[in-house]
Amino acid sequence: MADDLQAEQTPGFKVGEKKTMEEYQKLDQDDDAMNRWKQSLGLGTGDSISDPNDPRKCIIKSLTLPPKCAIATHSHPQMVDGRPDITLDVSQPGQLETLRTHPFAIKEGTTYRMKATFVVQHEVLSGLKYVQQVKRKSIPVGKDQEMIGSFPPNTTDRRVHEKMFAPEEAPSGMLVRGRYEASSKFVDDDNVAHLKFEWAFEIVKEWPKK
Image (tube, rainbow, N blue to C red; front, side, top):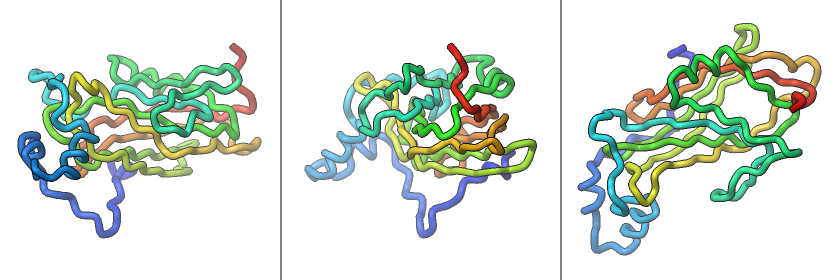
């Protein structure tokens, strides 16, 4: 699975020099534009909520697939035809195995934008990416990569980070209906994998009855 989920490098992109939180906070303190940029990232606001007993830098909490969710960045995902969001809770023990063995249904042709919810601890997280490969009957049918971005540690002012992905549309037609297996990974600029998991879904003609 590691080779299948190798993150692609952006041409011409170079990983920037790593800085500690203290170094970021002292960076160009007299520069108003720089201070506004740091405030927009949440640097230097609120009290740290990093767990000193948990060495993880990034904790992925959940993935949500809201059909036809709202486009606005800060708006809450909308429901379509009264259907609730599909939330994949990847933070609880046993949930990753459940995702692999119990596929969820997606109606063909549905447009959705996946949302990731995660927590950053201890230091700035640089260049977080989501990589996904989808297979059907063990044959690769698609690979996607989404740049999520760089984020400071969460604080009492911002307890979680959320990232809404680019819109996607589920395939349509009799030939594409059925079960798919997906392998996914969250990885940063240092090639540290913060979460790797497998899950399954089914493309169906109609939403299952409630």
